[in-house]
Image 1 (cartoon, rainbow, N blue to C red):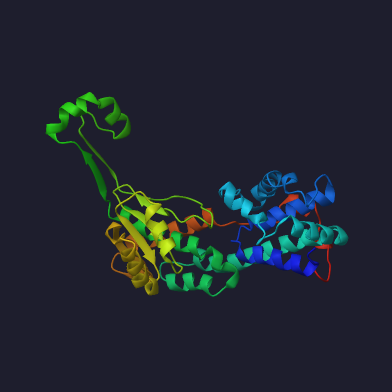
Image 2: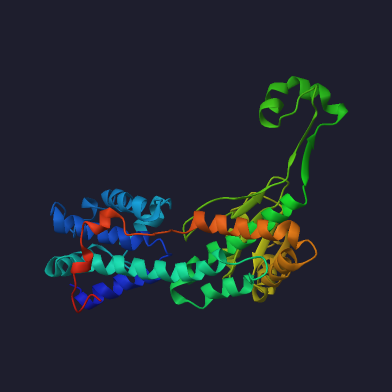
Length: 351
């Protein structure tokens, strides 16, 4: 049987690996809360709580974070693997939680609050900035330099890229045209119901013009290696800020059904990525590679260049809007946690 020290170490490892939402640690806390208050599950029997605990977690995450976990079932179930927090560890954590009257639960939620406060400090720089003061490198580096926030850096990168791309595409008033040539009108007539529903063109209107746009795919889990952003004029956009190996390089391209991929990465990774993609024969699928220095240069021009008055405030506004949507904002402790009175629970080991 594991000791309480080993159980705490396993829990701390999961907390350290978690993004700021802390879905997996919160799921553990809710399992322990259920055992302590209801006593209707056996911590050693995984099927007693493997599926039910996801609902318990989501019920508290909705008021706490304003969202619930959308990761794949397989990724969520990794929580109970032998190298994470398997039932034997849950059992030891439960013993400690019962012994202390809920100190393990309180410990997990304090860690959530601490990580959220770190995030708030980093994000407040952006939210309080103007086009004259915002430094995108400083913003990115604030996540690199804070160990508790590194797991969220991929989403920060994604937001930084999306805000810039979206703002510039809108400012340029780009248009995307879909049209059919005269020699294909007979085929158009045959499938006019299809082309009208899917492509917004028919025999009387064989041309459709729309505004160019980029889109974020949305919240993804840490195991996802697919598409981050896409455009309605062709390119798919994959954002990587960490080192790659051959397998991951293959996944970047093979998981995206596009022959025009734009990769955004740190400058030091550019040559490595190109080398790996050349090795696996995928280089031809890459339209271009955008580096962090490119982003810094483009942000500088957008915020303080010749057209800063036209696009600077829009860029900052888009950045702040995406941050508000992506990251949790807990202005006050929800009643669901207040009613548990964790502030009154303390134990020298669980601090």
